[in-house]
Image (cartoon, rainbow, N blue to C red):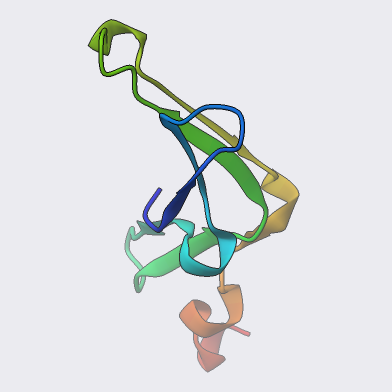
Length: 80
């Protein structure tokens, strides 16, 4: 998950993504042009325990119904 994180209100060493500056995305290609897949709805947090790195953790929840495969742009006009 790339983007900007802000400190969570409940813990000084936890951060949550700023949706306007972040995204969850990946690229797929197999015998076709590159397809960039994104998810519009998600939540998450990154927590760092400066005293014990073994307690660091990251949580991500993705609403899979918010997927955008940008399908029309990568199949091309000949396949529509």
